[in-house]
Image (cartoon, rainbow over all chains, first blue to last red; front, top):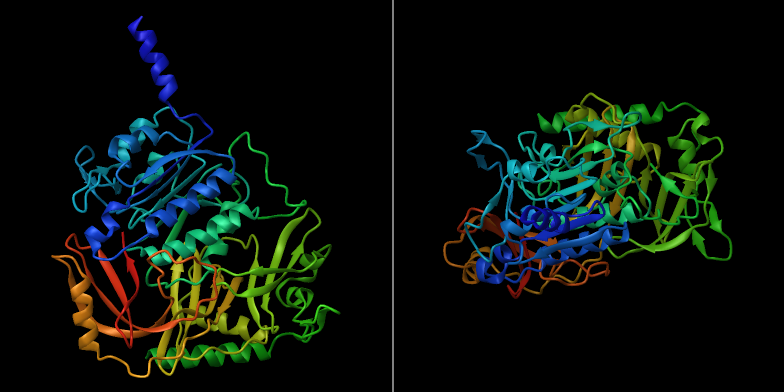
Length: 242
Length: 272
């Protein structure tokens, strides 16, 4: 009886295949922590939420102190995932190596809990590869980051035959918020214009941002269309671009 | 050494551009829509310069649209689509006809990496072939996700206009993925520019305890309130600012932008 209740609860809590999750760390960039007002995390999260919703996903998640480590791990099995926070090649004691990851908000200026790729991988065990993962943080676009693998995405670029139905974006080295805002806005706009993920990435490279402030990277299928499985593709009058 | 490479790249590109086969169609400024008062380079002319005759077969132009760019500029957009409705080429021009954006679609991810000087030479070659003005100064070259970006930042009297300038994106063998040209309006500079050390003191007064400034302040033309939530998409003039960088207590980098005259905070940027 208890087992049946727990199973039912697990089924209820598990994110469905149509779900997307958007998290953003607000506290670490707030006036109390940096000395100046900063709405960039809210703006970054808002544009991600709007775009994912328009692509047919049911969007959950949290911005600010509600973005806890527990909430994040619970949402990690989503098919589309966006996070904006501090990121680094954090030490994973289980693997004994620097593995990538990012910090939750937790209402803390400093020392907020770290979410490691191994925790996400454990949460996603048995789940198909994510459709779209956008880690808007420093360092998680580097080869050493195991976040792509945690979401089931191999670190390779495929264009043409054999493309995976998934796409991962993040940044190499230090990523500045102002540059990220411009790049991400162009990426989401291109997706909503009907672009494939690879074409949207190319289009975003053309937008004005300081190259010393941002080095974007991607892995997955260039021609992937990251719509929710049941979503109707937008009516573009027959117009698409690859 | 860098200047020698740069000059060599320019020379190679100019020679390469001048030796383009005679079949290349010269750019022209034919009226696109009579009666609309718009005068710009037709997308078909640009397509003829970028695509092979085989690639040009069956392409159809869509009716042009007036759009607003990421920077808030009003532009005329022309799109060329293939037989299956797939977009092949997008061109945007300012209302005065100046070319602002060329974006090709589905450019192959080629292996190989262009050297810095080869990337500059290829970028210049594309600009010359398209009849575009050569940007001043030396460009920055960056590799990103199998593409190479060659970026000339616009400068006004030696002061950079952040995020303005010419940007050329190439694939691994130098084929054009796209190019973009940004030129924002500038506000009048302040009658009197504050000293750099005064800017440094004003920045320190704004910072929380434990934060440190490093380096010396630098002048730049910036978009005001970029970090504090002003609506984007407006054609806001850039303002002259002192930019002060540093690190917060946890080591995260930040930059404050202060009005060059009044030292009022114009913007904030940080690195997560």
